[in-house]
Amino acid sequence: MFLHPKWFILAIVVGLYLPVAIDATVLHIAVPTLSQELKASTSQLLWIIDIYPLLMAGLILVMGALGDKIGYRKLMLMGSIIFGIASVLAALSPTANFLIFSRAILALGASMIMPATLACLRHTFMDEKERNFALGMWVMAGGAGAAFGPLVGGLLLEHLANSNMRCDSLKSLMIINKLSKFL
Image (cartoon, rainbow, N blue to C red; front, side, top):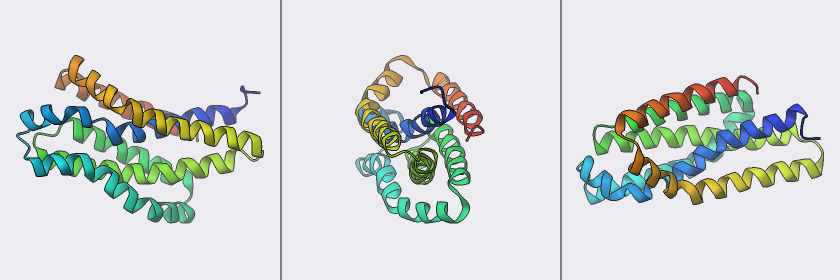
């Protein structure tokens, strides 16, 4: 049952959605470090954390409508490319304002990925039981990503230097682009 290609598509969709969910909370643990390293003011720290969910929530319906016009596959691919590039920009951010800008671009990519992944599940899983299972996995990935975001942020702060983070962001971008070709 789970060897059918649609389960591979579910894995890709969940894999695309998981970083979107993680990014919502990954920087919460990094506030003291961001303040020190980027010389960020209190206002800038607030924008660094809040720009992502604020813009994503504001753009998600617009991107869903765009997906209806251009197709969810194109929207998902464009969103993952934008999200990957913005992740690299965020990892390379030299200033707090540049990080705010990068997180705004991340939100644009995320707002494209979310409705596109849901549309992909809707079109891939025609059987109601299978679709319910797939949607449950999607929701679980979102909840797990948001819950594990601070842990991921703490691990990155604890174990990786800036150069390693930059390398990991580039690797993630390449992996996402390769996997998107299967959709």
